[in-house]
Image 1 (cartoon, one colour):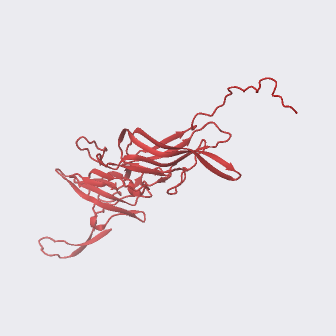
Image 2 (cartoon, rainbow, N blue to C red; image 1 turned 90 degrees about the vertical axis):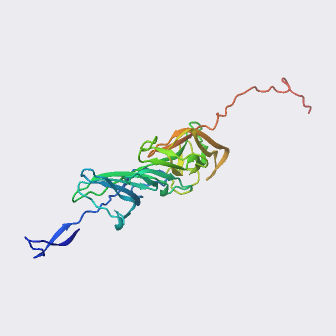
Length: 348
């Protein structure tokens, strides 16, 4: 797009315009953003963001001239960029422009609280986990950076590839029984899977600070610093219905937790606590009716060591084989007749 400017040109010693000439001056190009990309893998109900789900982000940015002693100048500070009709745009009042040969640095954040450095880019990003049991897209935390050098024209759109700053987890339960294959009557049913002591807040360091390296997480500790994270019941792997009922898991079969949840990256040294209810069932068939009788209920409670890393997805697998030792039989003896010989006389 061009603006037409009327320029007055002075000829020789004349102090006024002898002639008006129309000159076209190219308007500087506004900084615009390209469709963002988010890496993601889905299974069961996954509330995390992917490229299709992402509809907005907050942008930060600065620029520096190529002249000697140039200083870094912030130009974007927590400006909302939204997607409409497959175009990413932001409000006119925040528009910034490309300057030829200037260097530019950008950062984008989704769902985090940002503290910036003097150059206007994120220094830290804090996160507080929602307490709702059902995961939503607001649970996810994304971060991206980009850089460019300004051109006189035909500048590229600023393209962000977002990374997940949180970790993601799910649970799988497998029935690994290898006996009773003829009847296959033993099933497992697992409900109310939880991590009971996940960190509910933390700080991500986008820039190194003191002992905290760039890209590191520091969870918030202290009183009331953890929460229950509910993964729901273990149901069919393709079941995406909310609050799905627990599945009866037969021999050589498996199920997954109804929900996948995000967690603040941290190391749990023998203190990650996982609980659920595991029922052992026997299938009963009467004609066309199939029912499952509960023969044992276990309040599963296990503490393990695990380190959650940002951007990584984890599948915690609980395998259950035979519910106990096989019932076996032996013969102690066959009692003698009484009396041992002959018999008791019965008079007729």
